[in-house]
Image 1 (tube, rainbow, N blue to C red):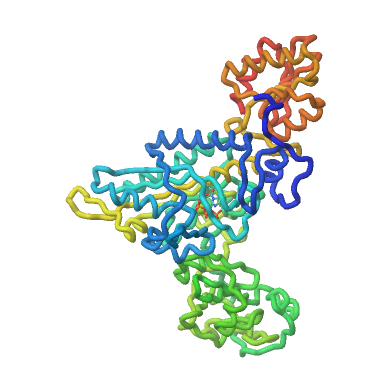
Image 2: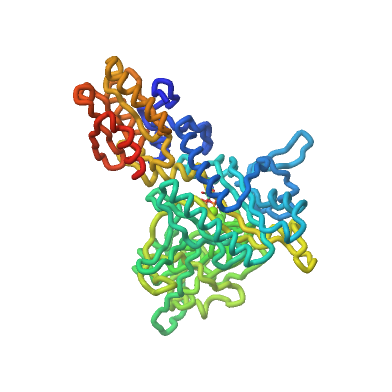
Length: 572
Ligand code: ATP
Ligand code: MG
């Protein structure tokens, strides 16, 4: 490719709304353009990288025995009504109607559709196992589309689905995909760690997320400093903390003017925060849920969802929600409250071990001191569950060693679905004894566009992107320092031709720009190797190769250049 022809419109200024490095550099280097919030066009450089990620995925899927298909993006509501997800998927689903008023959605995922395909064709155990996948745009109207390609509303996903006749078969399919995913991210050059993940209503450790560790990650990964344990913080269930016994003092109401947060109350009453309890109110699929944790703890929303058997993730309650069940924002505790059809209370286990604590009095500007939960909460009205978020002050659930927390970008997830969809949608097969059984399913996703962004989040410096070679748009950039000098251009052109003949993906910067501009662009775009051809190269017949990753300079005679470049590329 000639740089003079390449459509990579670089920007001088980074748009103000770009908030992570990958987004900044991709906009600046002319890799992507924003069309609307969370909706992007991939320009040639980004698209080449995406194609490389996809090629790696295709190769590894092929090796794993998975077969590529292409399902429609537009999905009829009927399928989602069958699985029961049409009414619980919520605002994230982009819905539309055709001219006959029939309802559809733009696929956020394809479990329903793939199940509806195989249920009509797969009838016998002899057709199993089966694994189908596709790479396609997915649509999710994210509450907060942000971070460029990392959390967008239209994004590219590889989604795969396995069908087995029994649990042992599912285990094997799951492991095959787990291993394939490890190889895919490894081949893409990413540093990725598989971690235990939430498996929704099905329970157990039936899911792993592949996390690219990076500061800008939105997920928290808790991991042991000694053993292999690593999990999404959402599934950590820390042990209840014990508290020293105390004599229960009589409940007492105190005035707390304008103290609407537990921190403000603790400060106002000169209490340690560990002697307070905090109320956070959620809406879980229409149910108003009061979650109570110790003042210095945070609520694990996924644990809370499980505690109330919620079909969807909890959302913060609105003012109307509070009004509906008569809660006084800022001054809430379970003392004197009762559950109802619209209202549940979930109390963290640790709270039940506390004595003489401070919490809301359920009226404006008032709190109680000396709440003793076992005495003052109505046992019939509360659910006691481990709903506090695990922290790095807890210990490893496997070996008891200290824990640490790191930020991760979820680039993939593998999941044992079991019979969730086959059961509800009637996808049955006949086993060896002629007995009708639901197919046992697994599902496996990779965020292809997110993976591209994650690679940049992991590999960059202040000058720009540092592509892992496997997914770099071009492997080598040749920069003749003066495009008007015919001798330089001839030398550059013949090296360019030779590298192309050898199958090296090379770009020749033939633009009539100053050398400094070309160097800056090469660093920004992040080609793994940059070759400089200057007057000196002609005089000495030597060229300079710069390794983008570590700045290493290698001088080589021009007639050995191709071999040296090939060898260098192998190390990147
Ligand atoms: P998240 O928790 O980050 O919202 P998810 O768990 O809902 O993601 P999955 O349903 O597991 O996502 O989708 C499979 C993969 O698709 C994810 O591992 C992720 O890499 C990618 N992905 C999901 N949502 C987005 C998005 N909004 N933008 C880009 N990639 C996404
Ligand atoms: Mg996921």
